Length: 114
Image (cartoon, rainbow, N blue to C red; front, side, top):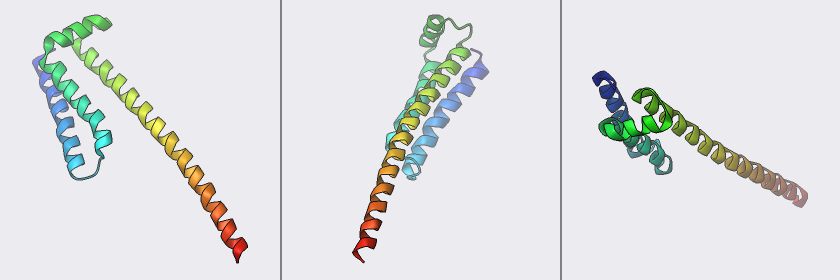
């Protein structure tokens, strides 16, 4: 990986880390979700600084360039985060449906009492 690529990846990793900490501090992001993003930022920094690990992972997955390895891991992490959010959305949709049905039943009961 060239020096420019390392510097860019390092800034991205540190940038993600700082932005997530600021979002948690200002209550724009809950701690539950910040953990995943902090791991992403830390992972980028670790891979950039620990070149031996990055080379080993690159050889392990059969990539030709170390930047490809970082890109692939980033893509896999984003897929996992999307899967996590899909599960959360499904759970919340079910809860909204149940609450809506309960409110409808309560309104019918209220109308019948009048």
